[in-house]
Image (spheres, rainbow, N blue to C red):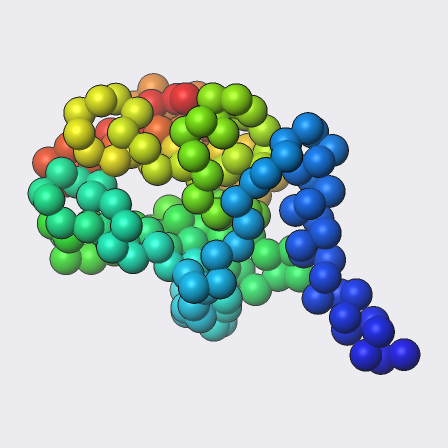
Length: 175
């Protein structure tokens, strides 16, 4: 009986992704990428947690070198992940613990255009402004994310955000 319960628990995250996608009419969502799963220390929870590391995939700061994006897990039963970015042009990683996603899997711009603010489309990297440098779209519309006051002063008013780096400086706008 114990092994059946464990098998059911292990299948629930996949079922949840499938059910969420199909309940809203999305036929194909990007799911977890096993090759990107890592274990990282979360300074907020002071624990080691499963996380996602997207290394050497996109140039986010326009210097011609690929950068790294992590989503650091909180270790919860329904895990949420906050954004961490390491630009090749900066010495330290930049942490965004106030932006929490529960499905930090790369989706395409085409999926974003088709399904708009669907909760299954939470992370897209694309050159949204046509400047030749990849930007990050995040859909952090959930109860665990908040727009910081500093971002509100910069014109961000929703949890659907485009993040762009110009000469190492973070630029923000609503999607």
